[in-house]
Length: 234
Ligand SMILES: [Zn+2]
Image 1 (spheres, rainbow, N blue to C red):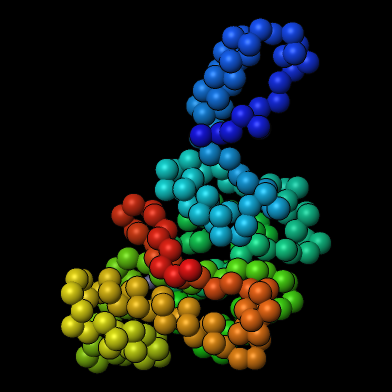
Image 2 (cartoon, helix red, strand yellow; image 1 turned 60 degrees about the vertical axis):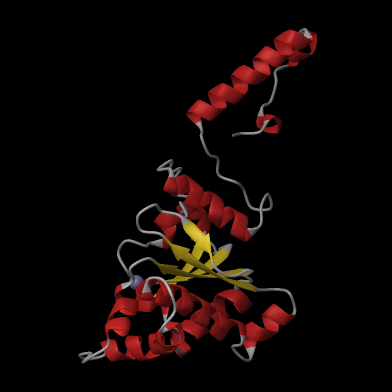
């Protein structure tokens, strides 16, 4: 529900009776609510995690606002980027962070690899964004029914270079063996938590930035059925 503080009354507002004011206020809320069920919060108005979750709310409700997807934004971003969040997510075609979080050009620094595994290139990319672009938040975004995690859970012969993915995910699968519930979803969640821990303890740059309070790493799981992003770590 939009808040009244965003409703700017005209000068005649002062001459209205209290009852008329109340009527105008209710009408404004209803009109704003109908025309704009969600709004794009601006930088400085909300912290990065709140901005991400607000975007997921719009995306979940299919109330996309497609912010920062204009010619003006492209020209502005050509001069330099200032993304507000880093997202490490799976390459799965159903989980593009810019769509899930309803964002546009220059908003998110995205690293995608199947199973959102961590290797030197991934850590280097995150270090670059955190250290040089001063991005204050990393979100590790796993998702429901992840194929890379599923292949690891199933085990057996893994062809080609795919084994580099399953080998990286294997510790999360081992950790959840015998746990109650769905083995695949348990492993998906454990894989997110494992990667969050790998990044939080990564030396020398990420752990130092976290220690200084300049970086936060959180983990989340995207639900393919509902579009909900659930935070798994704080
Ligand atoms: Zn996946």
